[in-house]
Image (cartoon, rainbow, N blue to C red; front, side):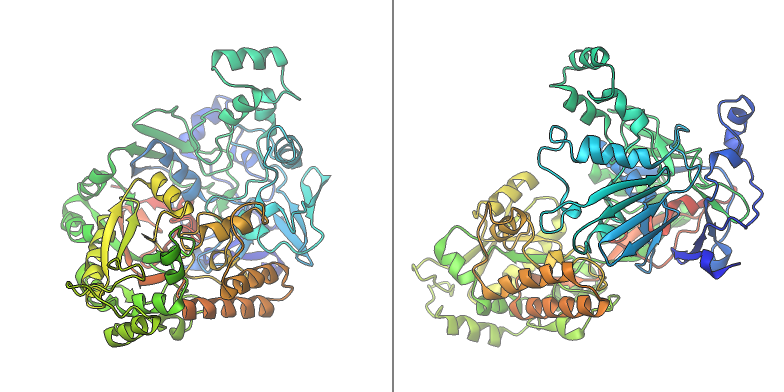
Length: 632
């Protein structure tokens, strides 16, 4: 096989070689539709140059057609998980965190600013309509740059120094985006769990667009469905991420056939999917996915009773023992995958707190370091995580090439003596009769920690932190609220400190955007107003008041313009060093384990893997379209 035809995906070989002769094998569940003329045969359904996955080359097991994959979810909007798990992307990440063409046949990048995308000839949407450059043009001209459709302008990932790219349709299967300077975030966004979706099924959406559809029919639909206008009507059809509009064509491996609201959603195989294996089997192997909804708190019990074939969502480590008890009875296995966030749980001092004396205190790095030193992480690990987690800061993990043990351990060893010395040095030397340190205004030092009220695990950890902080003269109390209220309070400065997970990508490489390390949006818990200032280019929020934070912003801007991997790596390392020294967030533990329940009949699910939203798309990087069932 020619080396130029190879690209690596998932540790599997992904290639599109015109010279490779493959004899297609029709999908049994589609035979009647093919014989009845409802569908063309497989050879005319897949692209002329399909993505061919060589499972043998990666030590995987080629599979057989058929089966029903059962999933348990808790909310109507969890239909979006099929877009996440399916993970069909223009450009995709593999489990080694490398970018490769997927939906695209190929792509070229010139100087980091010109991106040329080549589509697969003969690729079709799930309804059989051709997938072409027109679908990109429609998104660009009729949605993204249409001021009525997108009054807020283009997505952030499409702007470089506030300037958009030029967009060109080169031919029916080629499009190009060109910026005046490099756009380093473009491909990572495309490959994300919720990707930058640069295309839409134009043939479907045009009927709801005032510039293309029948105006009278559009007005009739607006009245019948009580929509505000045609824009609202169009948006109600554009549910690509939620995958709950059964009429909207998709390129994902499975397509939804159930209208919401419902308690069970049925996803059928996409008969025009673009991947096949080397034996000529069109993926996905599995015919149907059944997604059943129920209360999140009962999902662990249902999982342990054999009601699911692949489950990690809504399962936690403290469910592990119970789940293991059902293995032999219900013919499943429970695997433990590592989570890949920078910290499984972290505390976030709000450096934009509205209270002046708290704001001054929280901005003093000695105070943040003292709080970190006064946490007994080893105790938390033993009591809550059975000693299976790693103790340390909110930073990159050993699996990242940017990792350093120093980053993990700075200011996080349990050292009450040093913590108390730092607090004394700040001037917090007075205490009340209970031993609590006194604030400058004479009030006892009591730190309320806001939670989103969604995790008993967080509460357990906070109780242990409460006990060790008392020894430093600081009292913690937990203040739960709903997630929306939780976010609003932080942005408004009403929150002194909050608890959440750490940086989403603890296994980053230098080519991945370090935006989480710098003020970049208002939802960053440690500096929401500084993030808002960056997000709005200074129109809202506040400019960063600390020189170290300003430096993080400068470094992030430099990364966006970097022309070499070496330069990107140097920027990442300096940003990580600043965080390790300044402790802008206080990591508790990381590398925690995620229970993953897998039916013993389900093949090609890895035994050891990482479980993460970004990067990873949870199961997405392991390509569930290659999972298959052995016979009963």
